[in-house]
Amino acid sequence: MQLVSETRPQVKRDRLLSLAEVEAATSCRKSTIYSLMKTNAFPRCVQITKRRVGWAESAVLQWVQDKISGASTNQAAV
Image (cartoon, rainbow, N blue to C red; front, top):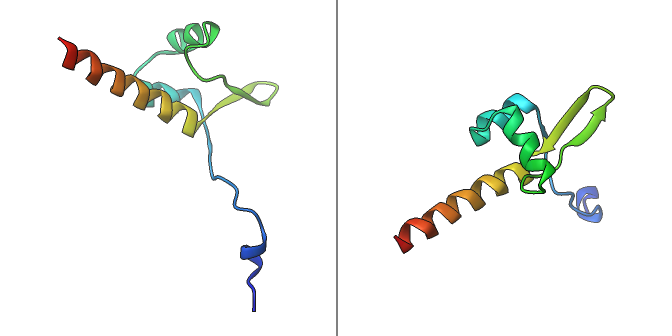
């Protein structure tokens, strides 16, 4: 007997973060986040409704990890 969940493709689970959650996760303020987005140095937000945007949690957390990894590499070189 095969279960229904076995026949469906697995979808990567992600969630959208609010600006306040992105600020908390990155320690950056709104102006910095949007400035970094303009230069493609930060993940783009997703339009949820006319007046609401969100950021993919996985993309934001990957950006944070990349910054931490970069800091570790720079300190090792000093």
